[in-house]
Image (cartoon, each protein chain N blue to C red):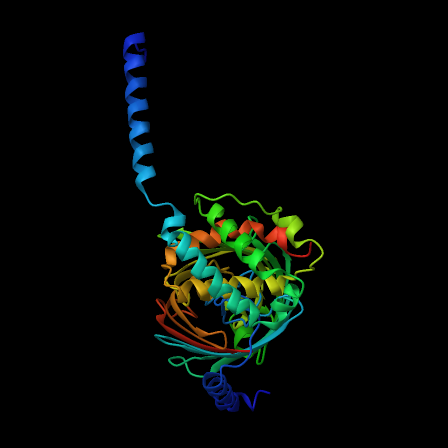
Amino acid sequence: MSFSPFKRSLRLAMLCALLSLTGCASQQQPVLYEKLGGEAGLAALVDNLLQKMANDAEIARHFQDTDIALFRKGLIDKLCVVSDGPCEYTGDTMKNCHKGFNISQADFDALVQHLIHAMQEEGVPIATRNALLKRLAPMYQDVVYQ
Amino acid sequence: MKQSFSYLWPGLLGLLCLVCCNSAVAGSRVTATGGATSIEGGAGGGVVPWAVINGYGSSGEWSATAVATGVFVDDYTLKVVGASVSYDNRIELSYARQRLELDTLGGNLQQDVFGVKYKVAGELLYTRMPQISVGLQYKNVDDFYLPEAVGARDDSGVDYYVSATKVLLGGVLGRNLLVNGTLRATKANQGGLLGFGSADNNEYKLMKEVAVALLLTDNIVLGMDYREKPDELNFAGEDDWQDFFLGWFVNKNLSIVLAYTDLGSIAGLDNQKGWYLSFEAGL
């Protein structure tokens, strides 16, 4: 098959138009951040999660010397950034944050279960819950046994 | 053991009631990540062993499960009771007692299945790499008379397998999808109930097994198992096994699986289809 230069550029233009259209369409989809309820939704979710963490002795013991207000803000910002929200995470890397805490696999599993329960209680739909978990899962290797 | 088999059922039911009424402590892992228990006693689907470790124990934690399963097909009834202990989300020891009632032919076939499974790599939910486990199952039939009469060579055998299991978070329609592939080396005829090897073949056969399961909600799962099987005995054909299951993880202490299963031809009786019901209790 051979195309004239004109036809080729026409096809290219049509392709560009199509791509920009789909680009627009995908931008109109609410980002994960919005599905999680935006700033207020994330704050409520984190407060719920912090309550569960405080009530779990195995997890709470890692937070004896932690400034909870600072941790809360860092966690909200982190979840905001992870879910494509309009935030800036100014904290340290996940790896550095967890260094020396000796967080076990059991701690991590328990935290994931607490997060799932917190999201359920805050009325986050299952597809949104799983989308957030999918983005958080790779952090496992930077958190456990650092 | 053999005589007391029928007395295991009330005991298991008692244990079920106990965990049902008291939401007992369980391990740290996320609900449903322990899978169900296959008819051979280890964590898996209905007939396929998965790479997951039974129960909900995570690092440094123990877990234990007890299971009672009935498979009710046209001319046979398979009853299984089993138990397992696991440690560290790493190693699983299991035992299953299988009793196949030959409803049409008369009599029964029984065997013990002792299993060991060891997780070698990956984390089901967290790593890009699937969770990979290796395992073996030592099986021993009670009475070799019938298996020998139909051409089996041995009354005991060992299956070796490697399984890879991965949960794709939000994999389908925002739901979590579990995918499993298992490769099994076996000499077992009809899973071992008809003995091991045949008069003219004592070689291991490499069999492929797969499973997929979709978590419709956090504790309801819909899926299927497919298990390729050898066909070594001359007296009658043997088919692959498959089942479609609906599992309900009531909590971390109790799960119930209902399945529709197709076991194909067994000892000359074709099209063995029917229901599969399993109760599992865990601590």
